[in-house]
Image (tube, helix red, strand yellow):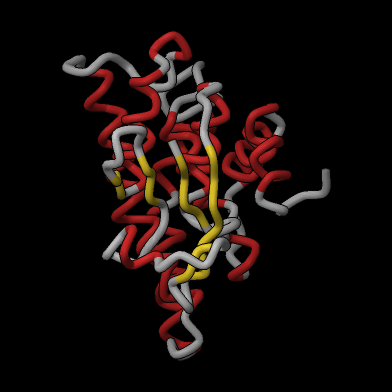
Amino acid sequence: MKLFYKAGACSLSPHIVLNECGLSYASEAVDLVTKKTETGSDYLAINPKGSVPALLLDDGQILTEGAVIVQFLADRAPEKKLAPPMGSMERYRLMEWLNFIASDLHKTFGPLFNPKVPADAKAVFKDILAARLAAPARVLADKPFLMGDAFSVADAYLFTVLNWAPRVGLELPPSLAAYLTRVAARPAVQATLVAEGLIPA
């Protein structure tokens, strides 16, 4: 498998999951402005959506959308218990969190990185984010991870998105700040942050 990623972007989530699963993979960085990969390939020929992540499977298929990719990877290493079994109510709870992170959090962060969005509009998006972060903040005040005592692929995604908060001047509630520290300490997360050049080796 090969993961196409941009350092620190939402592709950090499946990158973390690959390392948590201990799966064999290659990785290739993508310049999202030029749509070229680090080897000079046309990224739009790989993923016509032009966004990251994209996962090249061993049979040549391309899988996109981070919330889908992390579940695919978790199912390749069921012994790691990063996702409940398909068909279980717990799996639907995991999907519930993944969908919330993708639609309510991830997409609301987007305008805060766009230089064309006026400052007053960004203030509105920050207020929206603060309100939406209340739900995971409440859960993580009582539990170490979103699904309870065990780390899951939803945590890889939430960790990724919450890491953007300091970059846009968004203060996190104490339970989420503590959660970020807790997840960042995991060996697989540390290895991924080093691999993407986000922290020193």
